[in-house]
Image (cartoon, rainbow, N blue to C red; front, side, top):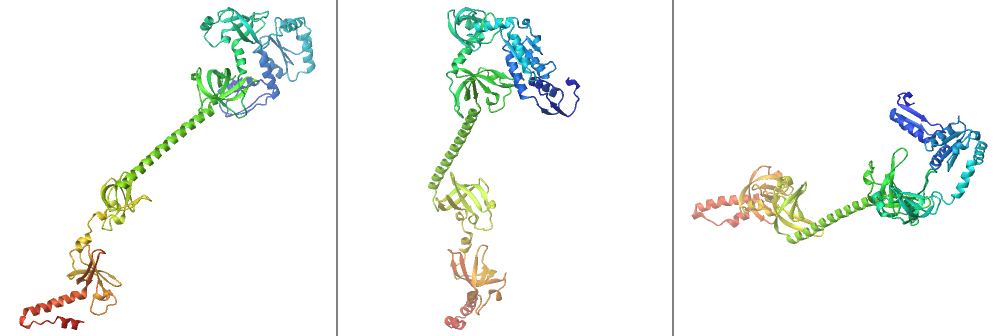
Length: 545
């Protein structure tokens, strides 16, 4: 009927309270496939109805005939009948006990009975009473009493009496012989089993459901072994887990054919591994896992229900974290080793240099305040801006480039704080000393007034050399401020009265330069007339004073 549903953007889906849930899921899947859009679904099916349907479906696989009691107009009863009819060929929908007859149950061993939720109890009881009074039911009851000691789930001891093409026939002391299919004997290949099984071999087997038409009682050696193995499966305390090696047997799917997990062999029994617990990532195809052995953890054990659940998720997460931690530890070890190597190299480098030593280094970084120069393996010192050059205008980026080799003087080593002060300037000749060497005490030279100080005037003698004329040496009379007598840029003659190379100071005097000039003048005059030559030095000095 999906073809009658219009094409729209939004769909509302409502399920009748008595409708079969599995059928609803099938219809919904087909509807969503044919009509894409936004769906709002209300599953209003009654919980009791759902449980009744599941119970009926399970019972239908275990009986030879099935009777569904209830009105034919009852949707609930009708859905029950449709459900069991798919699994039991001899299914009957009756409204009253009058519809029952012995022919319906001919050659039947087990009869299943259910009823719709609205079916009155009196109708159900009447139908059961009629069935119990049938002659065939009396014989069935007698047969069931005779067979009471053989039932599905019972463990029996049997002896191999014949080996067939695809099953083994055994005698276990019952009126019927037993048959164990090769697939229920072992997981080995049939051709191998046919060679290893011998007549007379004794085996324990489990009675499994069969039909009344079978000439043999169906048995399973594998299921018996699995039941026996459950006796040795240890329980788990709440929150406990234990590690185990599992072998993947097959893929498990639900009724919608969706993969829900894997069947695995673990601790001698069959366990279940949910699909979401196989890997940390989502797995689309599980076919490659079949037959593989995996490390996992048992996370749930219910020996009463024979349920065992395993998981790899926490184990894989722990392994992943362990690998990550190992990587972090290795990284930390490498960093520590490199640090120790650097420290050892620094120690060796510190031992290789001394204060006052001139060495060659490589510029490794340029900063606003200076150059960082490596003078030994792992030993980096700083050349401050003040130590770059005698020229104070030189900046770090002008002095050198990264990877340039420079010659430096080790000024100071602070081993405790790991600091080394270097100087490029100290390796160069001081241009002031070079030029100042030309000026000796007593010389009269020319200079230019550069600037004024409160206590004198600075006079430039050469490109790099300046001297100070104290206020007391500017004029014979008392001078309050040097600018009262002198001007910036004025050329003056000065006499060098003091040279202090250590402190880079030169003292000058304008007054003494004037005296030297006067002395030279009258000395020249006297020397030109020898007969008038007189020694007036002391008198002249007395007058000047």
